[in-house]
Image (tube, rainbow, N blue to C red; front, side, top):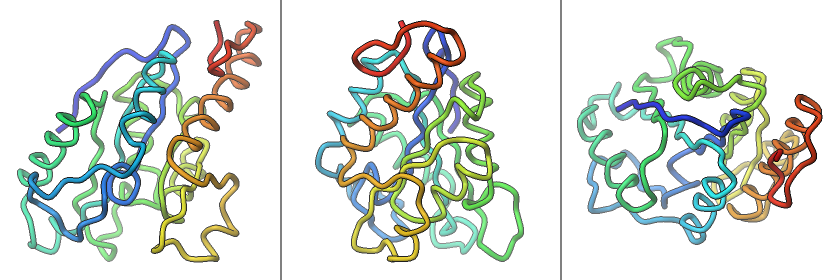
Length: 199
């Protein structure tokens, strides 16, 4: 399930991990009825869009490769997330298991690069927000900016390794917009708006 949208006039994007970041993690979920948003998800995603920044989702779904769910079920869950939060500009999904050696499974950069291309945004103008080390490692490998929002499943070593750590999703979005504003200011020489994005 992949679609494209225009970003802002400057072109920037915030890419969200799905499970544990936007929605409560239900292992191997292929049922749209089990989708529950994490607290603050609506407000956080709305803030990105209000700033004129594109949104996307980058998600590992190894349950497809394991034969536990189908790709159609993954797309059905994505459609439910879009219904709850508004349509994301792109969904980049890796269906492979860890041993497949693909280039897309986080912490590899493939999903981030795929989402950036679909949105027409350079990777260094993307911020990836996720809850585990693979999310920020994928951002780093792609040349994007990573922000970790720890949950009970996040390992202490992953927190220590992260360049930026936020206490909750809305804080992560605020940090993302501030970062993109700084990048935009350097790139365009335009003053940053209050939301962090260049005027």
